Image 1 (spheres, rainbow, N blue to C red):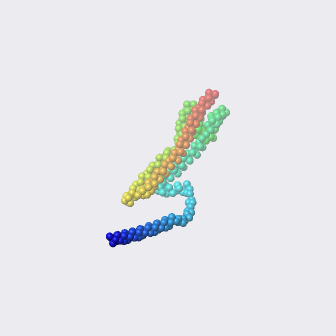
Image 2: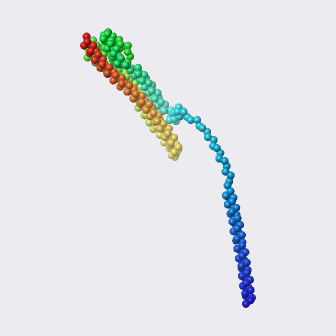
Image 3: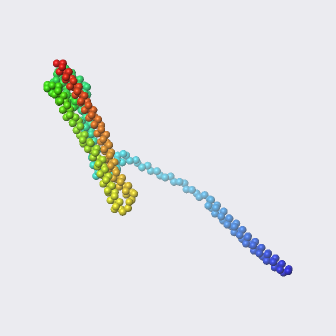
Length: 274
């Protein structure tokens, strides 16, 4: 019995000693792991030196002028159609400027002219009135001259002469307007034609490349549309001049009609005073 108790006691002491050794090993390994993890955290937590941000060098690019932008867009649109559109603008402006100068020179102070004609009729008769009209520039004075030349045939012939020659003078005032109208219609048409041809070229480039590249399509469409923009700009500019000239012609025609009616009244009064 004592031997059995002694052997159990020795077995228990041995097992306890083994368990104690294993536990100490685990504790020591856990502590070592904790120390290692703490060291790693300290290394990770240590802030790295941050490099000072480098100042980006800002280079101011020179701004393009309006003339340079227009020149670049003109070249990008293609000289074939853009050149024709530019010629429409040049010829249209040339005709418009010539008409503006002519119409301004044709403007006459009708009230002053009528007063001079009436004074001449009262003082020197029809011949003196003719001289006044011949020395005055403008379509109104020319109409008066034609009417006074028919004075010997009666007032009715004067009226017919004024109406007939008034139509001639109106045609002279409207001369050249048809060319401005032509250029207004022609410029956008040429622009649209350039756009269509440019689109055809863009599709040919797509077919040759075998792939629809956004950059390829965008460049082709941009170049094609530049001709349309150019044509529309030319049409807008010439349309402004055209409308101004039409209003100027209407003003002159109204002035001619009013002055002609007043001249007939003056001639009737002159005949009755004889």
